[in-house]
Image (cartoon, rainbow, N blue to C red; front, side):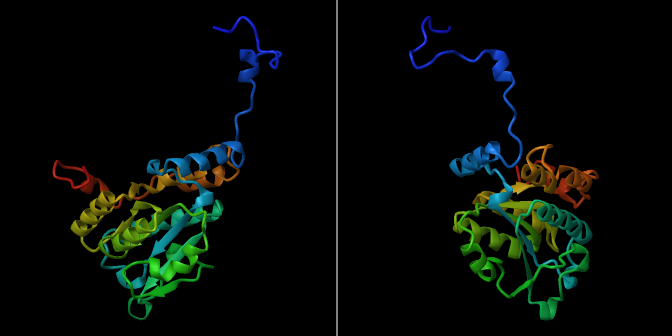
Length: 242
């Protein structure tokens, strides 16, 4: 119930019509700032926002083309993530594992304009140390690539050690062995990483159908991501991801 008397400093109370007429915040304004604050206050929720995220593309190279399960599908989804990152101005980092032996990044990933960083370590973090140190606002890393049980797993652990949230894009990560892929995903989840699909992360990043880039992003996700064998990994009573 309303109080019978208003305090002297309050001359009137807003009626319900006035409250309803208040504009709904759009992208890039106070709602976005509020979400940033909430993401910082409750990191366990795993909110993903463009201003505090980075996309890692790990070792999607020619020599893996015929050995890694669902390689074309993994590359297709990672390419979709890269297009969205560019539209939303999310920074992107690209690595190559021993390119002298394993070849360059495959062209269909669409990484023109990105300078790949060569590495031999089974983690992206040592090669990207300087980049990570230069981004104090960074909270979330979106991780795509191969192989799940090697560089993806070790990159995840290194990033978690730094206090960063890791979002493994499960339909953009694979291995030569599906067993290795499944166990690696379970291991990363046990360690505190978030397992997400590409479309789930894309919609978190854009946040609002009123976003100025939503129409372009909608074109990218109009067709579902290609099947990369995940359904079989998640099904069954013995799934390690239960």
